Amino acid sequence: MVNSLKLVVDDGEAEAITLAYELGYRLIVDDRQARNTAKRLGIKIIGTVGVLVKAKQLGLVDQLFPILEALENNGFYLSQSLKTEALILVDES
Image (cartoon, rainbow, N blue to C red; front, side, top):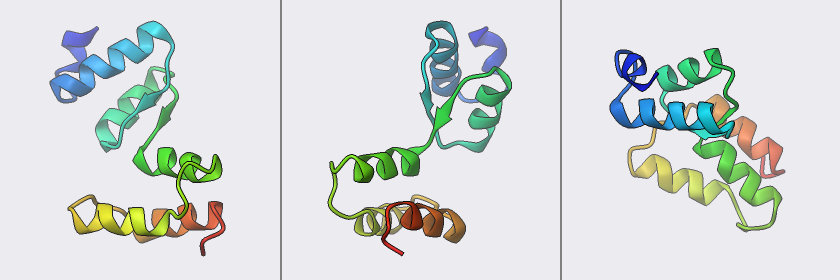
């Protein structure tokens, strides 16, 4: 499986997708192509922002907004709609 996935996604993502598939784990991935590939295989996925939202909901971080700002300031692409949705989910809008 991993070799065929390497034709569509990067090596590391192919390995991660294969591992998640074989073990039945949720996959943490942000790359759009890798997300779509994982979804087609029936793998549950979550991205960086989803992990951060969950961390805020569990009380592991005090505020989400400054973390999202730091990610953006360091080159992480974050659409305005995703940012807004995440902040609404944690009552920071």
